[in-house]
Length: 267
Length: 283
Image (cartoon, rainbow over all chains, first blue to last red; front, side, top):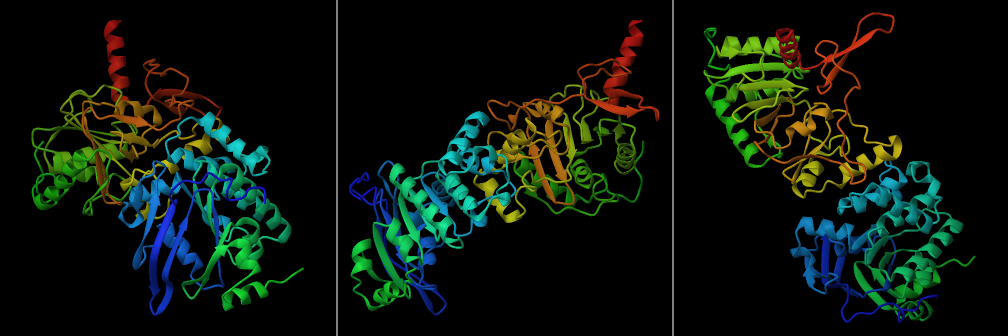
């Protein structure tokens, strides 16, 4: 890998820390005593089958869904720790468009399809107070270039973009405010393999360049191996195995992880 | 003129007026914030000023003098019928002179004559929510107001500049009131927006169908949204009034024949007539 975890700027304290999270959907435990920490510059993948609670975990960690029990601790750029559940809605919203980013599986959930590519990228800037049209436009062009979209299409609507381009635009729109932590929910889902490979390359380069911390939810073991420094394996709302990516995938300890790794098709 | 019998003063019953006044007080206390109220059926259709007429009925007193304008004119159907309505049900004096009126109910314009302290300007508002074309969920727009989360409105302005080179909103141009609430100024031309800023008169807004009241108290800051490098510019037809020659007032374009003939005249009839009278007197 181009960037090992050691090269990333490591701080003393984790960026986000969750302890003993629990959440039930009726009789179904979606989260059952989940604890995890993510450090600055680290990519953590959460893998597991459908219904294992991956996406629920992501939603709880990002404050979109309150847990039944447990707490999530967020450390702001000044190093102060804040409990997510004690933060007001306004503060949480600000967090989501400054220090955090969320990349949805379906770009249609993350983009405004009736707004041009430039407007999509500029939205977070304008929401955080940018009021200079020229510099917003400059930032949009720079980010389009960075995610390999032709800057000439800045005024085109995202619905005229291909699936891969839409996903790249969503990433540009999320990264424009230089967040430190990105939540990604199956970012490569629904794309064909060559487009997937290109997107993974792009994400890997951006993560290394910007020193981003990424919490990646995926069922794609290959994507996890390529991007993640650490892996959490989830099943029935529990973390059944956790460790460095290569260790977990090459030497799985838990029976379910062994099954998961063995189920990957080789081309 | 004496009031018609069989009606309470100002048509509305006292309890309704009290309810509306309470909403008005709250609206004045939180400039630009939309306050819900129990809008009543009025003897005119929605879209004709049911909100404005209820606000006027709640603030009017026997000593008031009322002026009603529609698109700046005192002699259009809407203005004439509302003026006549209040003359009948409240017995108040009416006027066409901006300077003489204590209450001015308006649709789509702010008078050219500068308003003074003590006057009340009542706007008829068809759609009070400035975000409704951008965000279809009412609950979400309320949350956006609560959190002062107005980036979306700027996205709309950005899109306009990207597509047209300028902000292509010529009326109902969104404003920030007191640095806090995004407000729809009702469909007045963008040309009139600067008149709202630090206006000495009390400005009340009533939306009857949408059941919302909001207000701008005297001398409140009202800023039209813009970008630093694309500042707000009021738009006006590049012509003088064909009747009074004014080059400052807002103009209506009037087609005069079927051969392409047209003239521009002041939309504010009182202002125009006042200028013509002064010009004649000078001759």
